[in-house]
Length: 248
Length: 248
DNA sequence: GAGTGGTCTAGACCACAAC
DNA sequence: TTGTGGTCTAGACCACTCC
Image 1 (cartoon, protein in one colour):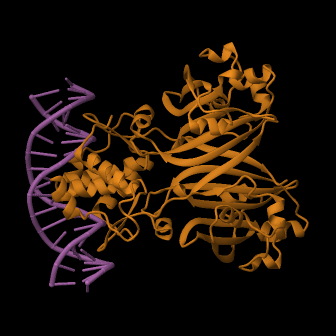
Image 2: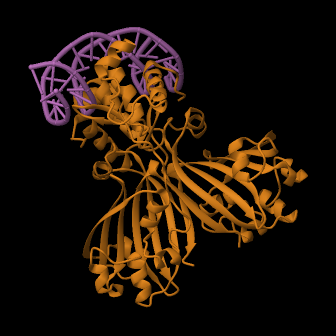
């Protein structure tokens, strides 16, 4: 099982060191397959596989017909522990906006809104009956020029106000609207898994299929009931999630 | 950038479907490289790459000289939201033991203890002076027969009691010992990132290098100070992390 | 010893980007 | 048109496991 040193990994290691040393600023391609083949005296397949290792690590981006480029630096966004606080909502910021601001990014968000009947899974998560109508808000969130997060929010239509059907649900987002409507939020529950970007997500994020992503499911509760389920996909190497836990 | 269908992916997809259909129970190898070459009329390299895709997805395990095997089912452990509660400590269970019990696993834990001076990073995290002596507890945790989690805990030696230097620090672990010594825990702070298993970790976990892992850093606080830093590496596809967040 | 996966060779054709 | 990465071929030798 143990991986022994081999040519492929040696080449990858050398390229990796060069990249981290800053030898390949944006716009400067890494050596081409032909160059690597000659320089390291290996076959094209070996050269390619070495580059493939770096791609899997998220260090480089391969552009057909153009070349291999080091990916932009990765100053991580930080999903701060106060991201869901009422204070932030009161300040008119949604959770993602809060994150982006904290990280010094320019947040951008595209929303599409629709309604659809609850699947069994969603009905279970929302503690409602399958088929009940849901308000669905699909969001594509960017920081700077990069898409870094996708989120789909499900809310029982019975709880929705007219603003929530708008693409811009107003300052503080739908959580703020919910509270205005008398549904005072009590707590959130988040579960975090590691997933792999599927082909569609990969295209949206501009990374290779299979790249590691966070798959986060957040449920929002009032003291009475579940009011929202939010399925979030976050580019793995762009986020550090932070949580505070009381010792009780 | 978009990946088009190709032979390699087609073969991977077919094998993936077979695996998920349960065609390869433990002990039954997938078709060998030679078999795939013949059955799909492709070159050995293509056959190999197809299997490599499944390996990267964590679906199969490759054993040199033996064959390719579907990995054990993945009933996820669940890092429960009450994992750090005082109630659990009072019941004599540490956090990992709590997780494993919740998931119906038999937990096992190997510990080595040592002391070492604080690095700059650790000193910063613990809010102490660099070089101050730390008690270091290295833990390798298994569920069933599989290693699923590695953790290294750092505690200022000044806070350590004799029991903490033992491999078995007693019921409830060092958090319970800390509280007995008068350091009442107030809160924990956890940060979560996605990482890739390095060669050493990969060998310990029995997976390929580069497999996605959770990298979690937990800091334990009293009302006065930071008392512990714990760096945890968890096999990505074995855990779902769960957190509760008050709306405040 | 037979068969497996681990790695590599030395080519090839293609779609695409840049010029 | 030239060069790039994307994919594939049809072999090869090795270390290893299993019998």
